[in-house]
Length: 192
Ligand code: GLN
Image (tube, rainbow, N blue to C red; front, side):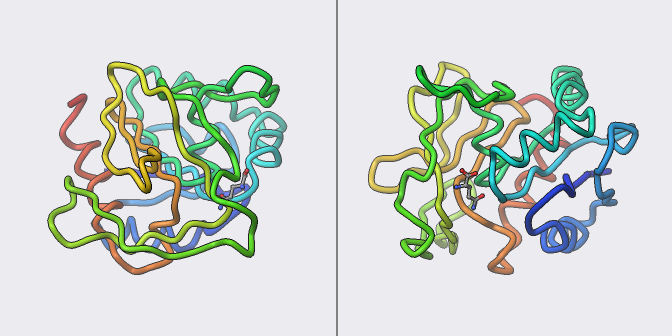
C-alpha cells in the first residue's frame, strides 16, 4: 500500500510515521508527479486558504481531484477536511468537493480554545479516541452516501464517503494509530 502525505504545510512527519507504523510505503507529495501510483493521500492540518493556494500553485489541485475520481483514497484532517468538503453559500474559498458535506471553519473557537477530548468512534472499537482539536471545523448537511463516524456535541467531526475520510481533529499528534490503520484498511478493502 503506497500512501502519500501532502507536504506543503503542517504535521507531515507525524503522518508519515503513523502510516509507516501501519505498514504502508509512504511518499511526501510536493508536486503532481508524486501522486503517481498512490493508493491514498493524507492532507494534513494547516491553514486551509494557504494550502488551497499552494495546491493550485504546484498544479496539484486538479491532479488530486482527478486521482480521487479515479479511485485514490484521501484522508483529510482539519484543513484537509475543509478542503475535501463543499463550500457553503457565501464561502468563496475553493473546495475540492470530494465529500458530500458542507463545512464550517474555525467552528470550535480560536487557537486558544484548542482542546483534546476522548471521542467515541464506534468503527474504531469501544475505547474512545484521543482527539486533538485545533481551530477545528465540522461538517454539516451530509449527503446520502456519507457515513457519519463520529460527532461531538451533535457536530460531525469524522465522516467517510467511499474512500474519502474527513476528520476535524489531529490523529497524528497522539500516538493512537487506529484512525491511520482504519484509512489504510479502507484503501485495501476497495469502495465500501
Ligand atoms: N482553522 C484552520 C483553517 O481554517 C484549520 C486548522 C487546522 O488544520 N488545525 O484552515
